[in-house]
Amino acid sequence: MTDPHDIAHDEWWLATLGRTLVWARLRVLEAGTAEVFDSDGRTQPFESEDSARAALLDAEFVAFDGLDEEDALERGFSLSEIVPPPAGDDAELRGLMVQSLGRDA
Image (cartoon, rainbow, N blue to C red; front, top):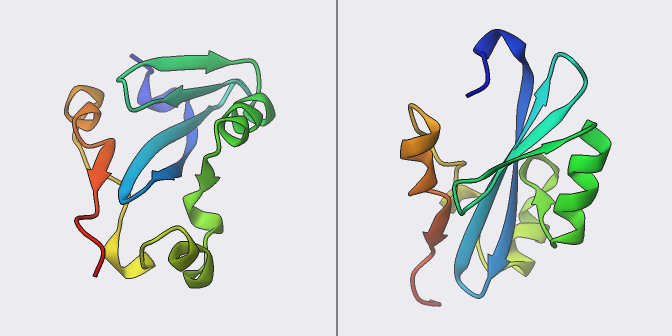
């Protein structure tokens, strides 16, 4: 587990599969390295923030902070419908990394 003092910041990324959201947390560490916590509960280390972002983009994830309402609607949801999953720790977070948006209206 990463020491909280080693964390520079977290970013949330998401991918959509129909009406399902798949979250990923990109954690940038003070040392300049990064980790991605994925929907399988794995933490994947990366040598840099850029390499972690490239891996997420290759897997068709987009940065949550970079979405506007139009982008969200094209993916099948409204920004008002979703927030990154809140959890006290990674064990709890694992079960929240995949979210169903329900049926289309």
